[in-house]
Amino acid sequence: MARGIICRNRLGGFYLTRSHITIKAMQKYIPLVARAFLSAIFLKSAFDKITDPAGTQQYMAANGMPLTGLFLVAAIIVELVGGLSVLLGYKAKWGAIALILFLIPATLIFHTNFADRIQVIQFMKNLAIMGGLLMVYDFGSGPVSLDARTKSKSFE
Image (cartoon, rainbow, N blue to C red; front, side, top):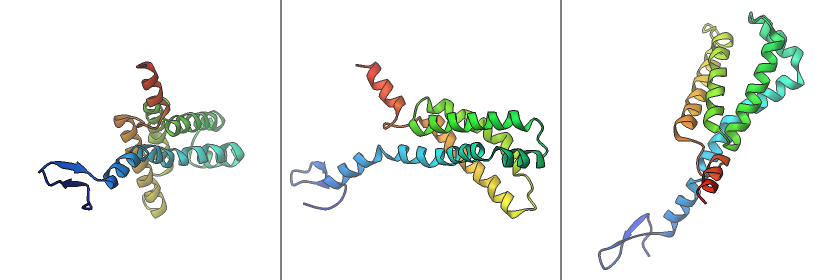
């Protein structure tokens, strides 16, 4: 048997090799891995805010934010709910939009000191995360998700 994705048999027809079938089977997990990578930063950040609320409020106040207690609770809720939504693929489009709407002001408040190289990197990192979240919004959560499971049950 020839190696490769598409092969030609003696009769002039084409067929797929086992390696192609294996690759296709693995592709359904790519969105799951991507969602896990995207959500990890939000879930870790929420955990850090929960375990050190005073430090987080000091950081917020140092960047000129008022009502740090209120914004701290809001940030924890958005990061937890949005992060879990994207991770589990449950209402992932809504979770992605919530996280984007959270990231825009967070990026503009905390990462616009472009004289500081680290802040430039943080700014660019947030843009990359927003790009990944836009992909979730546009393409959905993929076949291995609660959204896909809900859709498949509604057709049964």
